[in-house]
Image (cartoon, rainbow, N blue to C red):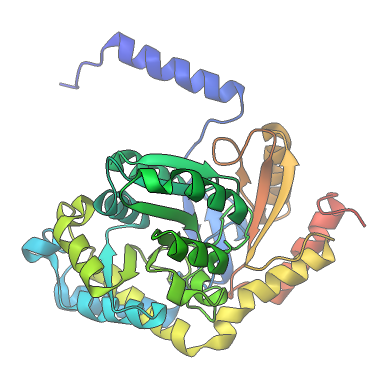
Length: 392
């Protein structure tokens, strides 16, 4: 017998969905079968070339990464079996955390189940009631979740506005115990890099800790080491958080920091303690991917170079990362532009509120080392034909 669903519950869900549908903000899952070269088939349809993926280096389909995942599964099984503090800390974890600490230039690193789980665990472990968090207004949603769980007082500053951070610190730092500045290393919807050097110096002046979320920076900038290294600020960012699911091509999250801070995470971060360990395949794949990132400078440089060529051809601002935003405006126009590109063989997602602000729905083009030059050239020609781009 199926579960009895209260009529009021379905009515509530339906009303919410209808309201979102009216604003072109309803989301739907689409089955996508990905292969190499950023090719994919959406729900059994024709092949599309994805320019909307976060697989910046194409490592999720790299033969050596796949083989590393296969070997890890053969040795240690399909799942971890329990949380890492019980029996789920299989031997591969030590090698992965050592690689992350080396790349980030920190004493240690701690791997979580995902980037989201990392942020909802790290932030409440470091600050709480009576403490202060100062966050960029465009930080990722998972940072918002971590801040809410912490019960700390939160102040938002205008995007990448260091002077605004200084004003907040001058006015309020003395009223709180601990203080934390939180930013994205690379902002996923615009592709810009946080001013980490300036923020790090400011944080040091006010006994405040700086944390960057490097989800879109590891493997793409700073010779693959991320945003702090790209800004020559690694010595000023004591908390370098990120994910293994984008350029690394696998799954998981991490914090790279000092040994005491990492040990505290393993001891107190709830999203670490009470979550089953990652499947060995994900850890094995990440180890191999990080090895490729460390040793292949051309692989790391290619995505941003492709993005810069694309932007130049369409008279768009020069990007610093593999991300090129094209703001359309309304949700309906952004969806129409996305559909038009799909008809020409390209998958480019329309990002809409609440992911972006009202009136700034956009296409976000993201470039991968595995994109073929011919596909990038054809994308440029298609965008020109559709009237997508900047002013000549």
